[in-house]
Image 1: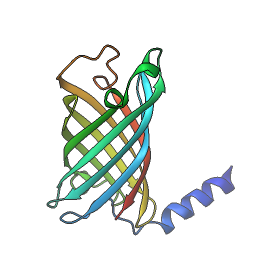
Image 2: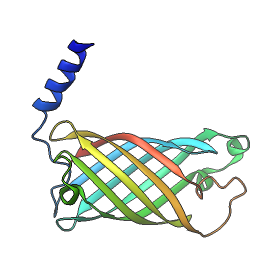
Image 3: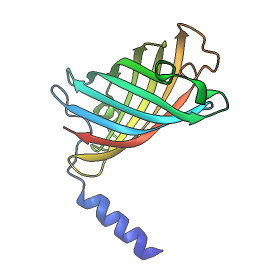
Image 4: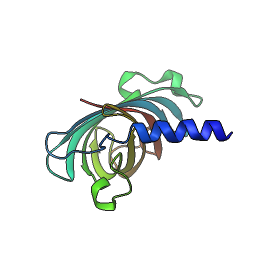
Length: 160
């Protein structure tokens, strides 16, 4: 067990020159799993830095399967596209230069909502992310409601 902890600590130290959010012009691409009550699926997102702590982007999710009744849904019911705004707070809370915490708002085809995400970079170009999404205002109530509920995204993030 001590050897495993030593290897993890050495790897974390050797990757210490990564930076989670660099400000204006910074570009991030994320791909991962979308987990929710009624379905599981995939999520992709892209963020572009506008300033030291502000980024905007797009996010899309597609529900693959899950609860009974989702197999009858067509593409339009499974797909969602969001415009997003983030406040990148990694350098404000100053936990680690490889870590970024980003609360934000999103406007989608299905709802208006918020999100809270975190990224951690192991190298200059690769890291992991997690993001919690929640609706604030629903446009239309679906019969299964797959896009108007709390969701969790987990996956990989890349610097472009």
